[in-house]
Image 1 (spheres, helix red, strand yellow):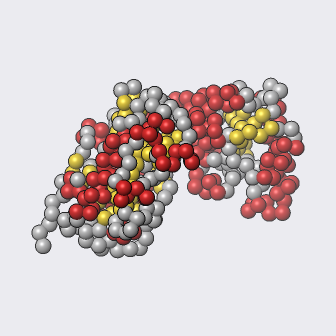
Image 2 (cartoon, helix red, strand yellow):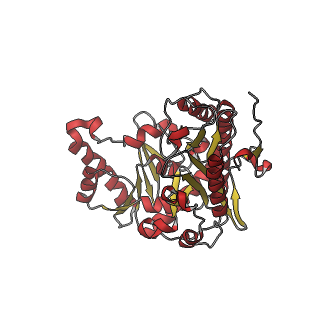
Image 3 (tube, one colour):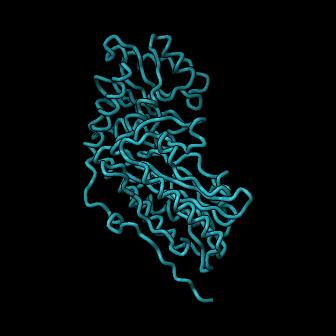
Length: 412
């Protein structure tokens, strides 16, 4: 059987090269900390207490057992609005933050979650709350308001009993992350470089007979090998499993002519995320007319919507003007046009017109925001689906694509 030669489109070959500049990590960590403190000042808080490992990393630059600490609250940081940053790390791990300029002091965390303390939760949470309340009183200059991003009920009660007024800490953390510094943009480019190397390895391996999980493993391997950290989902599927979306990789054997769709959701070097989607055809079978229609609709939607992300545009205006899919695909269209991204998927979430009133929020696009613009196309009555997504930087002159991995000309 003759083999069909695959030809590809690359939007800008120059952007596929690994950037020559390097991240100044110390400068990046201190700049992020100041952005976070600026948001805490707006709230009039004595400081912030952060348990989310993404927020801890944003504030301090440190990381330690990131995935473990997502579901075990074993690390936290107190950020005084005007005062020190005190990192409470896992027992025996204080040395890990020794060379981080955004950390003034490292202490051993007091764990009080049930897995560790069992029936002694009340005892341990009182010790924990006393230490936090002392920091608030010492550095709050009379203000006992504390922004907290994540806190189980015993902790909230213990702090309130000591006179600390707890307010939401996720909002100031989200607002701080919206505008990226120069070093963050370089770090994001490095994460995308690693992700696209993983995609290249997947691309080379996408032959009939491989399982979805085995194909997905190539992305994980490249990420770990090149200094990345983890992948937040397992969104790779093939053939009939591509529609509806949000089916994770399985042991299904990929067949000749199958559509393969994936969403990288990769946390790469420096903890920054590369969130890119592509859809490919497995093997040497020519794409069907239906596969081309799906791909063309997704490609057009993503690239038309990228052009809307210019400084001064509001999220409501983007929702109003965003391109929609042909009516036959409308039911399964993404709820959002795009989402922010940095250390992971981040605020804001920019909704489509049909979902804006029920779940959207307004805001303004600004220079140095980074977004992922995405599309899923699938018929609700069956057949395959296509997922495409691009990562972009908002500049003074308009959007610039950061992801540059090739598209398949045979599907356009």
